[in-house]
Image (spheres, rainbow, N blue to C red):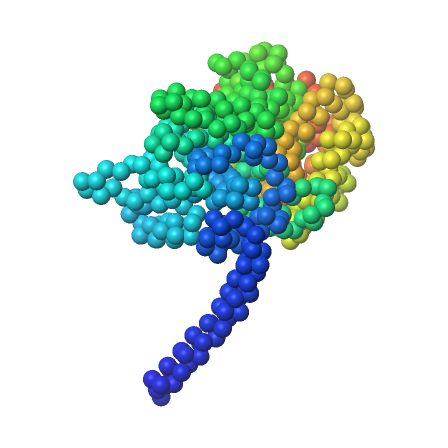
Length: 590
């Protein structure tokens, strides 16, 4: 029996009524709260749509106190263009600068967006942003009427003495600070010239590159106002206004120089000490992230990619010093993984996702030239993930973590590693606990090196303790570990979550001609059973166990040379399915 139309209408009416009541229950208290909180706010702020006013209240109460700002006194009284570097694809730099001006100068700057999109949903979204006061909408060109973007902005600036516009001259967000200063548009200076106003240079940075406005707000709201440790680090520097001279190209150069000088005052935008090394390099990936790497050895040498260990970085030299690379004619390329060292973090990164970064790196540095890979400890897992890349000839796994999600018998691990593995297992359920452990670990690494290093050596085997006791090894080890935390705590959590989830590596589809496995029998960090299990999963792989050696045998010059010689032999013997390359393929145990 079909329901009567009247009954349907009554049911629909009730649903609409309840929805309206629910909306009113939220909207009315919200409006009252905003009216109370913004009673003394400037008129420009009070006139904005409720989303902007709500963000303004949250920003003023929770976020503003954690931002290091200098130069607010340089903001002029009349209309102006604020021009800044642009690093954050999430738009968090526009969010910070916009609400900073709203709280400090009492005006809400607009950013510029255009409607020239065939996607009607995007056009509608941009229209909403415009009418909520966030964006200055630049319409499509009308036939017979020519009005550029600078004309639209200039007209807006001339409307009121309280108007301001935020412009990023570089256009799109780029993580690399050097590239943030390249390929600038003259639009900011042309606009200022047409509107007879000034351009204010600004620099912003210091925040983790994968953060969004929502991350900033929730982190700030969850941190007590009297907390010693800030929820994030963000710096803003504002320079002296620049009056257009009539030559937009020369004025843009002056603006670029002013912002570059301001960027030098922000720690996160200064070149790191490692960047001064001639071997240092950066690559901007297709998604805008930066991949940092070291490129050492003869340029005409055999290319070998080295993937660093857990808590390692591109600075992990091991015993592969320049003299050995020259002797063996090896070009050793060591990249930082995302979020580690100087490489930009990647959201929701995975082990197999690393292969695409490596593909772009090898294409940039080597072109079609074949290469081989050396993976140490956790780097071995990432090496296997790259085993299907075109051009890879051989893979050498030293002290290999293998496929860590298969490790079930943790009792064989040294206490330090057992704690890391346990925290990793819990990271997906209680990331905050892991972050507390990581932050404590970083503080010890930074401020209590001697006790930290002694504790690390305490749980190792005798050979590892002997190797790490050498002064030159300790110095290299310290530099490498500290560099892994260059971007602060948090990114190693992503490293752990990626490693100890299923990396989905198909070991039967590796394109490499050869896989070599070398492991110390006395390894207390990754037990020998892990290497034996991996060898069983890779039939025909070259396998070699080192008697009386531990995890850090790669810091021994003799062992490092043997490792590289075997990898070179495997590289040269490919193509041609050579499996052992000088290693016994039957296990080599003894």
